[in-house]
Length: 204
Image 1: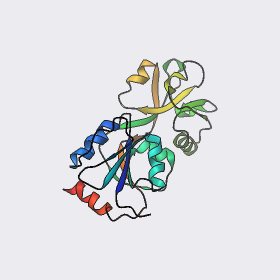
Image 2: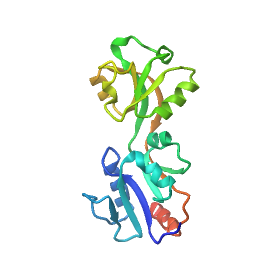
Image 3: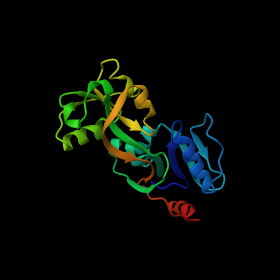
Image 4: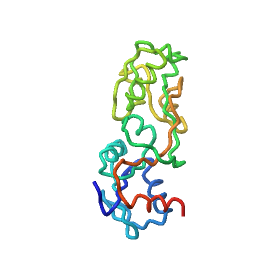
């Protein structure tokens, strides 16, 4: 599918949103803040910016609705899309970890055998547990993951953390790190003659 304009999908709200906008502006692209609009056109380059949910970005790019996307590597890995990462962007750094209540006394991953782990990343977690020979259940939650052990819904959590402050506030301690993550630029397999010009912006 060929188009006269490129499309890039970025997070509409959340921890990567402002930094993604700043990055595109730093490339010399001129556009209005998204406000209530989920699609904004650049004024000086054939590029449309889609402001959408972060976990939808890989699918937009995978299905060639967007030519590029800026998304957290953790989200990209969870979606298991076939598109490629073309650049790591050096912002939005965090780690995907497994944490348990401090009062539980659990010190190692093996002690989570037959336990329930609440997470928004069941695919990554299940793969990690299998690689480490631990049979635990991944309980998928959309949000408020840290609350799950406090109310007896789960024995542990698998979630992203940057400073560890939220974990400490909920009485949780890290026992394993699955991966480090940062914002990445991903590209669709869609052929578009403007892609080469977009890459030139990064080198100018």
